[in-house]
Image (cartoon, rainbow over all chains, first blue to last red; front, side, top):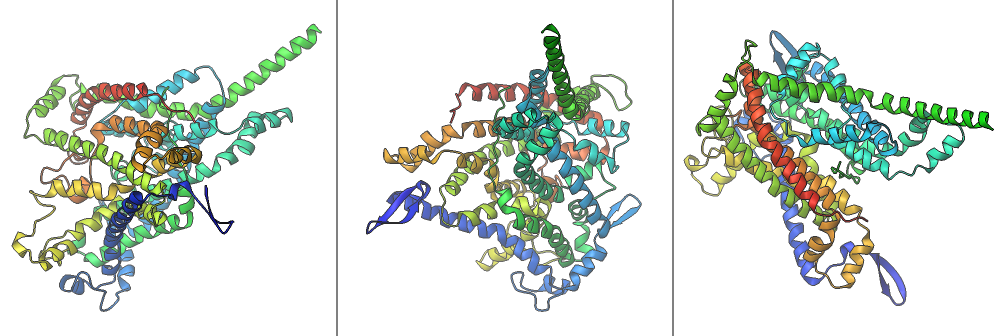
Length: 304
Length: 308
């Protein structure tokens, strides 16, 4: 921090990050302008969707696409709830069921897929055991091999295990403890001091107690970051749902499935209302926890 | 004395045993998961590549895929071309993300707002953003009014007939690549910003005192310090070489020669159930991609990481 002194008094401490030469000031002014235009361009389509979700179909077809609705059709949101559906074979899945599926998918998948790498990351960071190097090398190796086209094999194995298109699929497939998240947790726990654990050991604490009472709480900030990022990603997931859980569509999968029908069936404004439904939870989640999401994440250590 | 030593030894062994039980109880599920869903799935995929749909072992499927790759007009060859294009765009965007993250780290005015704005596509999700974008580019049709972009073009005097159909034959690929770049400003932002944030400010301060310029600061001071993060992202990107793609599924459904390998696989699995063809193609791409990924990893490992 550089101090700004005026009349012998420190009036403000200026970070080295904001100290600029004249040339840099111009550069960052241009950057600001470019970033602003890009930000507006990213927000604009979403605002446009929200505005048009309140229009009647007739107004949307005939009116000015940029204009505010002449009559705000709040009923579109009710209609979206009633009309947006997902056709899976002979079954028609209503929107309410898609919401339930989404919540189930997010809660189960997110919790397990954040907790398992935390556990493996902790164990690999803090313990020495037989086979550690081999397992770590295999984990890194499997990250290094660019496997392509395993979808077909995955479906066959899921069918064999009777997990394909069942709610249990989410529990089982989320339990992978090796991957990029494992590396992040591993490097995180490497930097956590072991002295608390040693003190607890002297007091007679076992390994489980040390993990659950001392180490897990220390990993919680990063864990919650992954939970929130994972919840947003899970809420918006549709590709793997279409492939492996076709009878349990989430909202995103349902909207994807419905997009072509929107033109002829309920009309686009109602479809837009569905898009807004899909956006709201993620935006609320992000607004509440942006400080956790935008916290420092670190990755590294592919050297096995 | 001896008894005490034996007791101590037993105590040590007991502690070792408890530790072993703890360690393996914690990692047994991930290991079984890896054995089934990585090793098992991949071995099964290799076997499937040498099988016919009837289950009979044959090289026919593999030969068919290789032939298809050699035929420039085939769906698979087009998919490979598009995938490689997305991969190159992805590499370019990674470097661009680094520069964007640097500007955010240097606290460009309203940096917090920009961080949120660039992360927005991840917040609202691919399907919402992509479907909104499709409507945004919507041409004049019997069903709907033109999308805002088309209206804007017409408003500035472009005749309706000359307004491009952005998701049509001529423009579809360019539009998808534009979209990928447009929403990709925040890609890797969390990781890069995290890496920048851990750099001790004293390092930058002393460089500044030596009169270093902003560009030199980025290239010679900051970049070496965040190299572990950058190199990891780079290696993972090469690992996903044949998985690169854009929003093909949502925006064009693979039409207008926009299919990527990912879409080609999705299409075969969901529409025609040609599992063996998918597995055979996967094997070919894995064989090509593995040495490339390992070479890149070897190359980045040559660069010494700075400890701080």
